Amino acid sequence: MLVLAGTPIGRVEDASPRLARELAEADVVAAEDTRRLKRLTSELGVTLSGRVVSYFEGNEAQRTPALLEELEAGRRVLLVTDAGMPSVSDPGYRLVAAAVAAGVEVTSVPGPSAVLTALAVSGLPVDRFCFEGFLPRKAGERSRRLDALAAEERTLVFFEAPHRTEAALAAMAQAWGEDRAAAVCRELTKTHEEVRRGPLGELVAWAAEGVRGEVTIVVSGAAPGAGIATDDESLRTAVADLEAAGTSRKEAIVQVAKQAGVPKRHVYALVHTA
Image 1 (cartoon, one colour):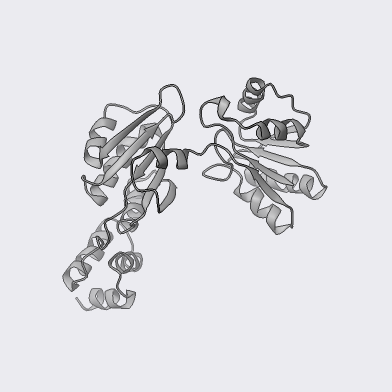
Image 2: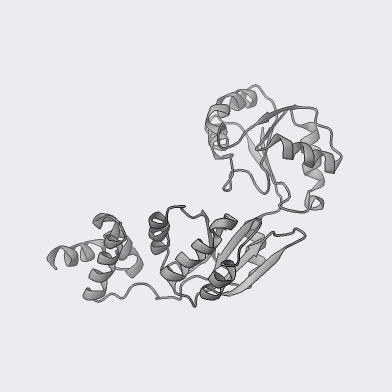
Protein backbone atom coordinates (compact mmCIF):
# COMPACT_ATOMS: atom_id res chain seq x y z
CA MET A 1 0.00 0.00 0.00
CA LEU A 2 1.12 3.53 -0.79
CA VAL A 3 0.29 6.00 1.97
CA LEU A 4 0.41 9.74 1.25
CA ALA A 5 0.91 11.47 4.58
CA GLY A 6 0.05 15.11 5.17
CA THR A 7 2.58 16.79 7.45
CA PRO A 8 2.27 20.04 9.47
CA ILE A 9 2.66 23.28 7.52
CA GLY A 10 3.83 25.03 10.66
CA ARG A 11 3.18 23.83 14.18
CA VAL A 12 4.22 20.24 14.89
CA GLU A 13 1.27 19.82 17.27
CA ASP A 14 -1.00 19.86 14.20
CA ALA A 15 0.33 16.39 13.36
CA SER A 16 -2.25 13.65 13.86
CA PRO A 17 -1.74 10.54 16.03
CA ARG A 18 -2.23 8.49 12.87
CA LEU A 19 0.72 10.23 11.19
CA ALA A 20 2.94 9.22 14.09
CA ARG A 21 1.75 5.63 13.90
CA GLU A 22 2.21 5.40 10.12
CA LEU A 23 5.74 6.80 10.41
CA ALA A 24 6.62 4.20 13.03
CA GLU A 25 5.12 1.25 11.15
CA ALA A 26 6.00 1.92 7.49
CA ASP A 27 8.35 -0.50 5.75
CA VAL A 28 9.74 2.34 3.63
CA VAL A 29 9.51 6.09 4.23
CA ALA A 30 10.11 8.22 1.13
CA ALA A 31 10.85 11.79 2.21
CA GLU A 32 11.34 15.01 0.25
CA ASP A 33 13.99 16.06 2.78
CA THR A 34 15.38 13.36 5.07
CA ARG A 35 16.74 15.99 7.47
CA ARG A 36 13.30 17.50 7.95
CA LEU A 37 11.90 14.01 8.40
CA LYS A 38 14.41 13.37 11.17
CA ARG A 39 13.43 16.64 12.86
CA LEU A 40 9.72 15.80 12.58
CA THR A 41 10.08 12.30 14.04
CA SER A 42 12.23 13.66 16.85
CA GLU A 43 9.60 16.26 17.75
CA LEU A 44 6.86 13.60 17.61
CA GLY A 45 8.89 11.14 19.66
CA VAL A 46 8.67 8.55 16.89
CA THR A 47 11.27 5.90 16.11
CA LEU A 48 11.33 4.79 12.47
CA SER A 49 11.48 1.03 11.95
CA GLY A 50 11.53 1.14 8.15
CA ARG A 51 14.09 2.15 5.56
CA VAL A 52 14.30 5.86 4.71
CA VAL A 53 14.90 7.06 1.13
CA SER A 54 14.99 10.54 -0.35
CA TYR A 55 12.29 11.39 -2.89
CA PHE A 56 12.41 14.94 -4.21
CA GLU A 57 11.97 16.80 -7.49
CA GLY A 58 15.50 16.04 -8.65
CA ASN A 59 15.29 12.25 -8.28
CA GLU A 60 11.52 11.64 -8.45
CA ALA A 61 11.53 10.09 -11.93
CA GLN A 62 14.60 7.97 -11.18
CA ARG A 63 13.41 6.75 -7.76
CA THR A 64 9.79 5.91 -8.70
CA PRO A 65 10.44 2.47 -10.32
CA ALA A 66 12.32 1.22 -7.25
CA LEU A 67 9.54 2.37 -4.92
CA LEU A 68 6.97 0.72 -7.17
CA GLU A 69 8.91 -2.54 -6.83
CA GLU A 70 8.68 -2.20 -3.06
CA LEU A 71 4.92 -1.72 -3.32
CA GLU A 72 4.44 -4.66 -5.67
CA ALA A 73 6.45 -6.80 -3.22
CA GLY A 74 3.78 -6.09 -0.61
CA ARG A 75 5.56 -3.43 1.42
CA ARG A 76 3.92 -0.39 2.95
CA VAL A 77 5.48 2.77 1.54
CA LEU A 78 4.84 6.09 3.29
CA LEU A 79 5.43 9.26 1.29
CA VAL A 80 5.97 12.58 3.08
CA THR A 81 7.00 16.01 1.81
CA ASP A 82 8.32 19.02 3.71
CA ALA A 83 4.84 20.32 4.52
CA GLY A 84 1.28 19.58 3.50
CA MET A 85 0.02 16.81 1.24
CA PRO A 86 2.39 15.01 -1.16
CA SER A 87 1.74 15.53 -4.90
CA VAL A 88 0.03 18.93 -4.35
CA SER A 89 2.75 21.21 -5.79
CA ASP A 90 5.18 18.70 -4.25
CA PRO A 91 6.72 15.37 -5.29
CA GLY A 92 4.34 12.40 -5.39
CA TYR A 93 2.24 12.47 -8.55
CA ARG A 94 4.55 10.16 -10.51
CA LEU A 95 4.50 7.53 -7.78
CA VAL A 96 0.73 7.77 -7.30
CA ALA A 97 0.13 7.40 -11.05
CA ALA A 98 2.51 4.43 -11.26
CA ALA A 99 0.91 2.75 -8.25
CA VAL A 100 -2.60 3.20 -9.61
CA ALA A 101 -1.57 1.84 -13.01
CA ALA A 102 -0.05 -1.21 -11.31
CA GLY A 103 -3.16 -1.88 -9.25
CA VAL A 104 -1.53 -0.93 -5.95
CA GLU A 105 -3.82 0.46 -3.26
CA VAL A 106 -3.28 4.16 -2.51
CA THR A 107 -4.57 5.90 0.60
CA SER A 108 -3.76 9.03 2.58
CA VAL A 109 -3.29 10.38 6.07
CA PRO A 110 -5.15 13.73 5.90
CA GLY A 111 -3.27 16.69 7.29
CA PRO A 112 -2.92 20.46 7.32
CA SER A 113 -3.34 22.21 3.97
CA ALA A 114 -2.00 25.66 3.09
CA VAL A 115 -4.58 25.87 0.29
CA LEU A 116 -7.62 25.30 2.49
CA THR A 117 -6.21 27.22 5.46
CA ALA A 118 -5.53 30.31 3.34
CA LEU A 119 -8.91 30.05 1.66
CA ALA A 120 -10.70 29.77 5.01
CA VAL A 121 -9.02 32.82 6.59
CA SER A 122 -8.96 35.01 3.45
CA GLY A 123 -12.44 36.44 3.94
CA LEU A 124 -13.17 35.75 0.26
CA PRO A 125 -15.91 33.46 -1.13
CA VAL A 126 -15.17 29.79 -0.43
CA ASP A 127 -18.14 28.04 -2.01
CA ARG A 128 -16.30 27.57 -5.32
CA PHE A 129 -12.54 27.85 -5.81
CA CYS A 130 -9.67 26.61 -7.96
CA PHE A 131 -6.03 25.97 -7.05
CA GLU A 132 -3.48 27.21 -9.60
CA GLY A 133 -0.25 26.27 -7.81
CA PHE A 134 2.81 28.37 -8.67
CA LEU A 135 2.66 30.90 -11.50
CA PRO A 136 5.34 30.71 -14.23
CA ARG A 137 8.54 32.54 -13.31
CA LYS A 138 8.99 34.26 -16.67
CA ALA A 139 6.99 37.48 -17.02
CA GLY A 140 5.55 36.67 -20.45
CA GLU A 141 4.40 33.19 -19.49
CA ARG A 142 2.97 34.51 -16.23
CA SER A 143 0.99 37.21 -18.05
CA ARG A 144 -0.43 34.67 -20.48
CA ARG A 145 -1.51 32.41 -17.63
CA LEU A 146 -3.24 35.28 -15.86
CA ASP A 147 -4.92 36.45 -19.07
CA ALA A 148 -6.33 32.96 -19.49
CA LEU A 149 -7.86 33.25 -16.00
CA ALA A 150 -9.37 36.70 -16.54
CA ALA A 151 -12.97 35.43 -16.72
CA GLU A 152 -12.61 32.78 -13.98
CA GLU A 153 -15.46 33.39 -11.53
CA ARG A 154 -14.23 31.04 -8.80
CA THR A 155 -11.90 32.23 -6.03
CA LEU A 156 -8.29 31.53 -7.05
CA VAL A 157 -5.53 30.19 -4.80
CA PHE A 158 -1.82 30.39 -5.68
CA PHE A 159 1.46 29.44 -4.05
CA GLU A 160 4.33 31.91 -4.48
CA ALA A 161 7.92 32.35 -3.41
CA PRO A 162 8.44 35.36 -1.12
CA HIS A 163 10.91 37.07 -3.47
CA ARG A 164 8.44 36.81 -6.37
CA THR A 165 5.32 37.86 -4.45
CA GLU A 166 5.48 41.55 -5.45
CA ALA A 167 5.91 40.69 -9.14
CA ALA A 168 3.07 38.17 -9.00
CA LEU A 169 0.69 40.64 -7.36
CA ALA A 170 1.68 43.37 -9.83
CA ALA A 171 0.99 41.04 -12.76
CA MET A 172 -2.39 40.13 -11.27
CA ALA A 173 -3.27 43.80 -10.80
CA GLN A 174 -2.33 44.53 -14.40
CA ALA A 175 -4.30 41.58 -15.75
CA TRP A 176 -7.38 41.80 -13.56
CA GLY A 177 -7.43 45.36 -12.25
CA GLU A 178 -6.06 46.95 -9.09
CA ASP A 179 -9.44 46.83 -7.36
CA ARG A 180 -9.77 43.02 -7.38
CA ALA A 181 -10.01 41.80 -3.77
CA ALA A 182 -7.26 39.50 -2.53
CA ALA A 183 -5.42 38.22 0.52
CA VAL A 184 -1.76 37.34 1.01
CA CYS A 185 -1.35 34.66 3.68
CA ARG A 186 2.17 34.38 5.06
CA GLU A 187 3.67 31.80 7.44
CA LEU A 188 0.31 30.14 8.09
CA THR A 189 0.00 28.48 11.54
CA LYS A 190 3.52 29.63 12.45
CA THR A 191 4.65 32.14 15.05
CA HIS A 192 4.77 35.05 12.59
CA GLU A 193 1.54 34.25 10.75
CA GLU A 194 0.17 37.24 8.84
CA VAL A 195 -2.83 37.72 6.58
CA ARG A 196 -2.96 40.93 4.54
CA ARG A 197 -6.31 41.62 2.90
CA GLY A 198 -7.19 44.33 0.41
CA PRO A 199 -7.37 45.22 -3.28
CA LEU A 200 -4.49 44.01 -5.44
CA GLY A 201 -3.17 47.54 -5.92
CA GLU A 202 -2.70 48.02 -2.17
CA LEU A 203 -1.13 44.60 -1.75
CA VAL A 204 1.45 45.37 -4.44
CA ALA A 205 2.54 48.44 -2.46
CA TRP A 206 2.70 46.37 0.75
CA ALA A 207 4.77 43.62 -0.91
CA ALA A 208 7.25 46.20 -2.26
CA GLU A 209 8.60 46.53 1.28
CA GLY A 210 9.68 42.87 1.21
CA VAL A 211 7.96 39.59 1.97
CA ARG A 212 9.33 36.70 3.99
CA GLY A 213 8.26 33.13 4.62
CA GLU A 214 5.86 30.74 2.92
CA VAL A 215 3.26 32.61 0.86
CA THR A 216 -0.22 31.67 -0.34
CA ILE A 217 -2.21 34.20 -2.36
CA VAL A 218 -6.01 34.12 -2.55
CA VAL A 219 -7.81 36.28 -5.13
CA SER A 220 -11.53 36.76 -5.66
CA GLY A 221 -12.93 35.54 -8.94
CA ALA A 222 -14.20 37.73 -11.77
CA ALA A 223 -17.67 39.14 -11.48
CA PRO A 224 -20.20 37.13 -13.51
CA GLY A 225 -20.13 38.28 -17.10
CA ALA A 226 -16.95 40.28 -16.52
CA GLY A 227 -15.11 38.67 -19.40
CA ILE A 228 -14.18 40.29 -22.68
CA ALA A 229 -16.90 42.32 -24.42
CA THR A 230 -18.42 40.42 -27.33
CA ASP A 231 -18.62 43.18 -29.94
CA ASP A 232 -16.43 42.63 -32.99
CA GLU A 233 -13.93 45.39 -32.28
CA SER A 234 -13.38 44.30 -28.67
CA LEU A 235 -12.74 40.73 -29.75
CA ARG A 236 -10.23 41.82 -32.41
CA THR A 237 -8.47 44.08 -29.91
CA ALA A 238 -8.26 41.34 -27.29
CA VAL A 239 -6.60 38.97 -29.77
CA ALA A 240 -4.19 41.68 -30.91
CA ASP A 241 -3.21 42.47 -27.30
CA LEU A 242 -2.42 38.84 -26.58
CA GLU A 243 -0.37 38.56 -29.76
CA ALA A 244 1.57 41.68 -28.82
CA ALA A 245 2.36 40.03 -25.47
CA GLY A 246 3.86 37.04 -27.25
CA THR A 247 0.92 34.63 -27.50
CA SER A 248 0.52 32.86 -30.83
CA ARG A 249 -2.50 33.92 -32.88
CA LYS A 250 -4.03 30.45 -32.63
CA GLU A 251 -3.75 30.41 -28.83
CA ALA A 252 -4.95 34.02 -28.56
CA ILE A 253 -8.10 33.18 -30.50
CA VAL A 254 -8.79 30.22 -28.23
CA GLN A 255 -8.30 32.30 -25.08
CA VAL A 256 -10.43 35.20 -26.27
CA ALA A 257 -13.25 32.93 -27.39
CA LYS A 258 -13.27 31.20 -24.01
CA GLN A 259 -13.17 34.44 -22.01
CA ALA A 260 -15.87 36.08 -24.12
CA GLY A 261 -18.04 32.98 -24.23
CA VAL A 262 -18.34 33.01 -28.02
CA PRO A 263 -17.54 30.31 -30.62
CA LYS A 264 -13.88 30.06 -31.57
CA ARG A 265 -14.76 30.08 -35.26
CA HIS A 266 -16.45 33.47 -34.81
CA VAL A 267 -13.29 35.04 -33.35
CA TYR A 268 -11.19 33.33 -36.05
CA ALA A 269 -13.36 34.84 -38.78
CA LEU A 270 -13.16 38.32 -37.26
CA VAL A 271 -9.37 38.23 -36.98
CA HIS A 272 -8.76 36.87 -40.46
CA THR A 273 -11.19 39.23 -42.21
CA ALA A 274 -10.11 42.39 -40.40
